[in-house]
Image 1: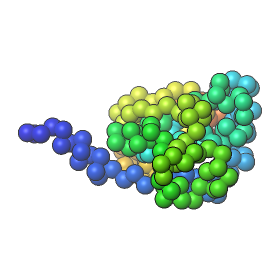
Image 2: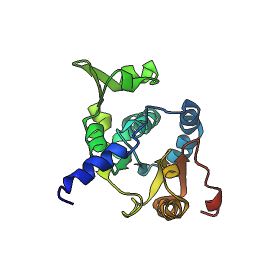
Image 3: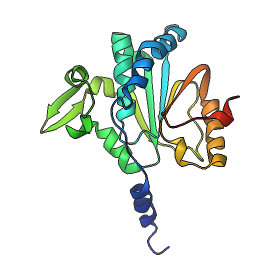
Image 4: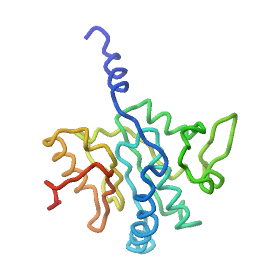
Length: 198
């Protein structure tokens, strides 16, 4: 109460920001080979909107940006917007810088490292031309309005930290965010059996 700024520091300390590029590679392979081509085709030359909710330091947002850039080539910049949100301001600031250590790139295939990262002063910097399509902002899934008209919503290993009642509220928001043909991309540990109707 005497030091209100301590709340933000404590909050950021207890948040679990474990993520990596292409975490659970089989899931990303399926996304690349089956899901994204269908979403791009369904967009009929229009915009492709992605929301990475609980994006931590940005690895998942940049992972999907790389896949879509590979798929769309020169059309990527004019068609793709990746919205990446989190409640942790420190993580968002790290993500906006788009620079990573070699350890943070563990698991990233060499072909992606070579095409999408430049080595600068011992760190790896994500390509600015692709980076421009990734927009970072603060969003609290439990309270804030969802981003709308989303084709692909990445919310991996986030929901499992909430109780059933809060999960239900969040799932309703996520369902509202998705376009009718949109896809929700969850983590391996998350089963939403109670929400199958949504």
